[in-house]
Image 1 (cartoon, helix red, strand yellow):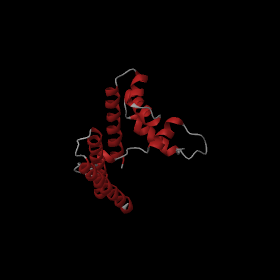
Image 2: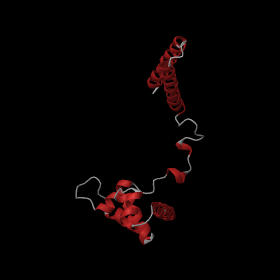
Image 3: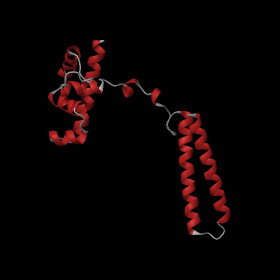
Image 4: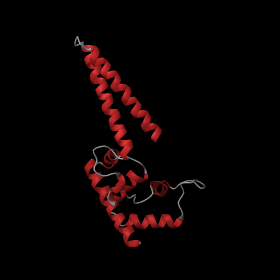
Length: 164
């Protein structure tokens, strides 16, 4: 990572040198040179952004990195491969197969959901459809699909916490 950082800093230094050179040559206010100088400024800004990201390990301008997020924002409720295996009934010998106990546990967790929540959740997380595709399939709005999925995730999360 340090090598990459050095390369970006070197690139920034070259871009700044080129911009200084163009500014010195730009005594006649050439339209071409002005646009080149602006482009170099944008490139320098982009490189600065990347350098800051590499140095801090988080997106510039953000107050917190991902590691500082609240637990509910970074938790994965159910392994996506597991839920997909549950929905698709994998082929024998497939690495994505789930055991009978895992299948039973998923059925218990999904049984607490309403019919629509279960449909939206399994289509989105099990079958891999986007929220827009789920909305079109079920003839409801995307916002409603989002609401059902969020509600399902909250119910499953509460169920799993109580089960522990």
